[in-house]
Image (cartoon, rainbow, N blue to C red):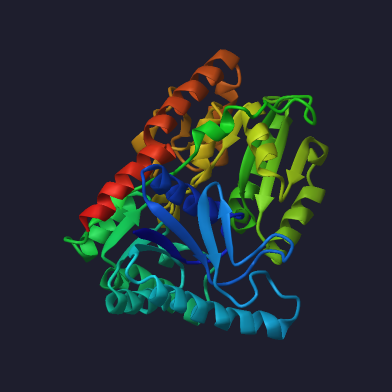
Length: 392
């Protein structure tokens, strides 16, 4: 029997969502489940993609007519339509072998669409619930607001179970549908991937703080830049700041580049994007402190950033806010540096005090690593998810 991924496309390379799918299905495979990831829309180049491919032992199927992204506008739109038909043909052909589909999508209409197919063909739907969508700022168009509200308020009608990423979302699911089966899978990470990665020693010759995140979190990036500038002005830190930023929000990029040009310490800030994964892990392992500011918002209380798992795997200390999921897993000064509030002053004071002792930072990083292995390691999560799905 197969457990399949449906919803967004782009596997196996991409952002945190793709990495969550990769490690979820890698964990299921290690637990003895036959996984298949479906890409109904082709995003990757024609040089690498076929209809059926494998990545880290996980088969993934491109169901569109062209298994790669066509160059012309007309061909791309034809390909999108063909991808849905190809996916539906796959469902029908393999209907006796599909046990469960794990749906990961931010489009409400995909919920009733896959739910209807699952009822006709006889398999279960489990929803990956990783954001409280109606709390995400910037999604302000009329149709987007309706879409997000429908997901958060009506999701339970269209699934047999839920994979929730946080206690906040678990409580929301239980309020909406108390009897709906639910499992919590927080951040997920392959800790073995870090073992043979060398600590960054080549490009950066001095201590550095580091943040990795999306350009969509411009407010957080600007918060970090201001904090870094204040630390430098007050002679509380003599190292660099590395920002690894992903995403394609053009206006946010313009705003970030403009802010960088105006900064006094711009020469001590290194901005990177679209770097190889091994390079990213190497930079993590060489950082003095890894930054993940969380705001006192519903969005940040509901989510659990994927990079928290990666940060713990690097054995370097995390600086964040004592809110949301952080307060459930980490202890300030023991396994992480947790500011009492999301403010530049609180973060600067917390960081400046910790930077006085390298031994303390190393100790916090090692304890954070222990917390990560105990809670975020993909094989254990895969085994728990297998048990959950078999009970449905």
